[in-house]
Image 1: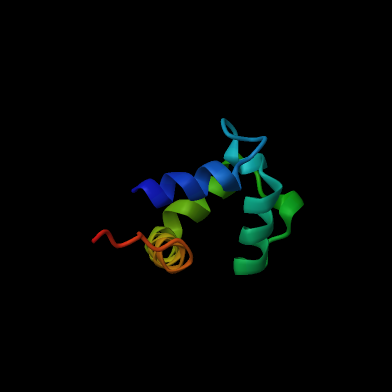
Image 2 (image 1 turned 60 degrees about the horizontal axis):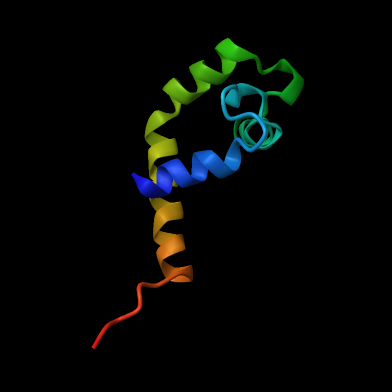
Length: 77
């Protein structure tokens, strides 16, 4: 859960209370499904999140795995 929150915090920089206005998230949606950024509003954003929730959850799990490779926990001993 920590990685999910960290990703969302970083992805919505400048638009934390209005993530549907985040240029980064709009660009990601545009590259994923082909809808142009200027056509994505509040309803389209939340509809996309709901429709693609399984794939998005898989993506967030993958980003947490990659983060663990980049920042491994040091072994004590």
